[in-house]
Image (tube, rainbow, N blue to C red; front, top):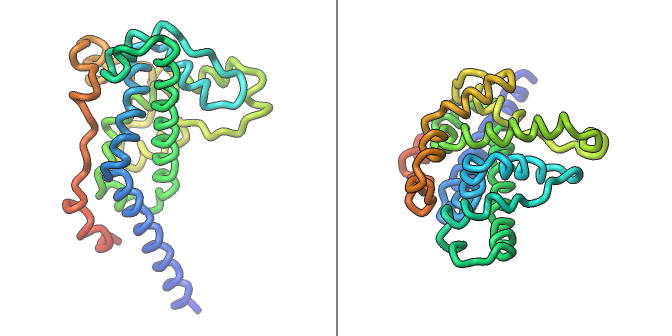
Amino acid sequence: MLFQAEEAKHARREEIERSIFDLFQTFSSQEFQEVKNGAFRALLAGVQNEEYAHFLASRLYAVDQLPFPATVIPILRVLDESKANLNDAQIEQADRADRLMLDNVLNFFALLAQRKSSSMVIKHCDFAYDWWRPTLWLVALQQQEHFKKSEAISVYCRTRKIAETLVVLDEIYGHTPLTTPLEIRRYVDTHPKILMFRSKPEMRCLSRHQLPVNDLSKTGTDLFSIK
């Protein structure tokens, strides 16, 4: 009986590890690169314009959503050359596609966080979390603040907060915990990447700063030897 229990436990662990490898293959694919690029464009726009970051956070809920802020339109034109010649209405529509890609990335990291029991396997793969972390914490902070100000959200929404995912991933990757809004704000506002994207317009263009396409050959062969 004890042997069967251990076998079942071992099989479950291998199943989780294989699911992590499947996530890694998805994350590293050229198709998902386009999703990451679109999502990161939306996040960089939030870094440049916190009214837009607040808008992004509000759109994660079904109620009390904020209107699209026109102040971000010049920034969106800079971040994405394909939007440079679009009118304001067309830019708002094009931005919706990037925001949907951000939803996909948020769901991806939420799925990854659910596999915390195999944290060593997660750390063995390069999910570029350090790259995403400061921008995601900015939106997480805005989401928390938006939640507190809304009477309707707590009644009608059960959406998982981004911060819940980030707390788990921070623990997996060994980051110092961010436990208060002040700590989150200080971390975001002093992060070198955030400072760079806020201070140097020429560094904002995503076409020059794509997220890396991960090399499966560096990790896949040894993945299942980790116990």
